[in-house]
Length: 82
Image (tube, rainbow, N blue to C red):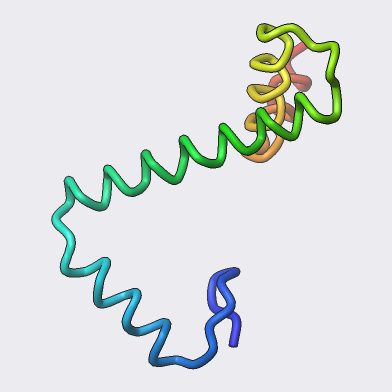
């Protein structure tokens, strides 16, 4: 079963995750979100470095920012204002 992009063996597994998240405080959920964001950025940076081994650290960061903007639709908005 796939729910919200996550593959679960059964609905009970999904419900257990939801229950665990509901037991967390807002601060704990926010910390989890920050951890997930950090991990996603680190993974993307590693991918960028693998694809472009000659990129400087600054170029890696610019490419990361570009990809984030594309994922959020911002690149289209920025391009329309040029």
